[in-house]
Length: 334
Image (cartoon, rainbow, N blue to C red; front, side, top):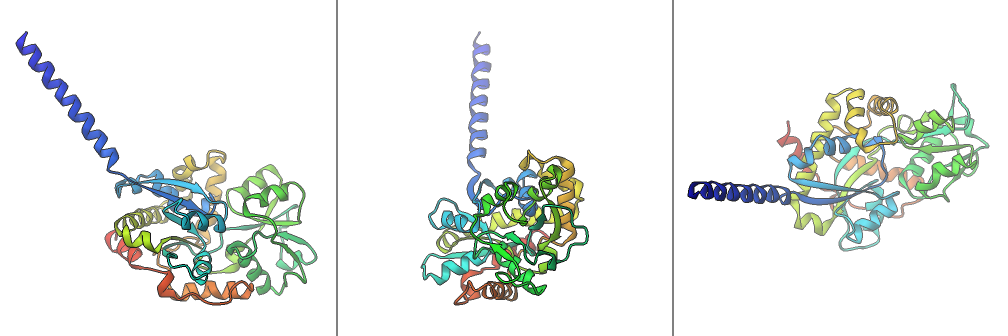
């Protein structure tokens, strides 16, 4: 009986130890809350980093929130509702120019083109941008990167917004698709997979890629408040490391493999749609290979914002951009 009690006691201690060890392992993950400007296949490397466990490898647990627009995403960041904001870097320029002491600093650039597509009500296989003359495009929030890039593309094709075409800027990002489906506008710009789902439902037809037409633009970046980066450099580094692993994974895998990897993030889209979208984004060289937001890139983005009449003063590169985390992620994950 004595031996039995000793064995039982040993097993009991082993069970308690195992439970404590497992619990400590889970608690070791640092929670990071991220607001993304929208939920789109456009950001596939981020979702791959989640589903393939790259954030967990770095000791992070990432909680994603759909900010539904750069303005709302930046508000969430500045009000400490989230740790990291994922949006166009124009938002950090606006905030810096407002004179805030604890402004947003960009530490990694994920996309290098616009991710939206121009959607029409009927198929237009021979579409040219001059076909929008006299029409109405639902373009998104005034001062937002999608709307300003659309204006940049139109002007580059000698179509003047407000004169040749009516670009609506009175609708928030989150309601653009619903407004178009409800009968408003002749064209709308939509991100994926929404644009392809419109085609599947015959609610609209993709006629042009704004990303292809617009060329290189530092379109979507990760930023945190200056104070958060100063207090949590290890967390920012780990986050950037995981993101870079996701980027490398996407570069090394096929659209079909990417679609399977990100499918849990898009339960309403079938694998065929996700595969086509992943191929479309990959073919147009959507993702920046090195995550570094360069001075030339930021200046080009500010050129576009100025052209849209939304920028009175340029923000200094060395204040709103930090590149050391992206460079270290590349060095550590060659």
